[in-house]
Length: 226
Image (cartoon, rainbow, N blue to C red; front, top):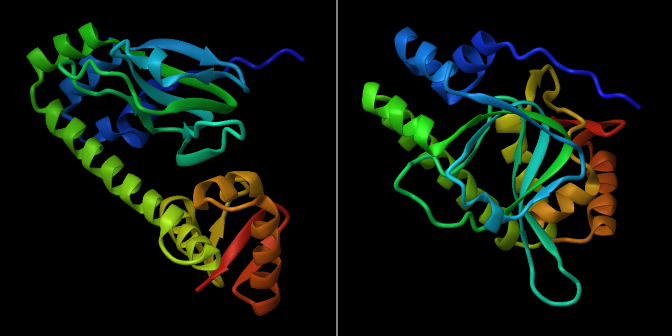
C-alpha cells in the first residue's frame, strides 16, 4: 500500500506545537529554514549507538517510543517515553557528543524535521536565547524520566498502573465530564512495558478497573474517571 505524503506545516509545527513556539518570530524563521525532512517507516529501530550524529528530531506526525532493552536471552524492553507530534528527540546541545543510551522504535510512520549539529550551532550563534528553550526541554524530559522510573519501580503493579494512567492523563488526556479521555495511542503491551509488568496482568487490572468504575473503556481508548 502506498503511503500518503503529508504536508509539512512549518508555522503550525514550529510556532504552535514544538518547544520552539516561545522563540521570537525572527528566531523561529531562522530555525525553520535550517531543518531538513526525513521519513521513518513503521517498524524501524534506530539503535542508541547510531544516534551519535548530533541530530535533533522534531516529530511532525506519527508515533515512536524511546526504549531501553535488557541484556540476556529474553531481551525485555522498558518504555521510557512515547513521542508524538511536536516532541523532540536527540542530543540538543552541540557540545554533547556521547551516544544516546536508548533506542528509538518507530511505532507508526514518522515524519520528522531534522536539525544537524552544525545547523543548530549556526542558529545558536545568531540566537543564543534558543539555548534556554533547549534547557527547558532537558529539564522536562528529565522530569518525565524520573516519573517513568517511578512507574517502573515504586509500589505493586496496580499502584504502578494507576500512576502511569494518571501521568498519561496529564500529558495526553482531554478533559471530559467524567474525567480524562485517554486516546487509543497505547496498546496493552506498551502499557506493560511502561510499568515493568506482563500484558496479561495489565489486561486483568484494566478489566478490574472498569468493573470498579475507575475507568470507562471505549475500545482501546478509555476515560480515567476523576
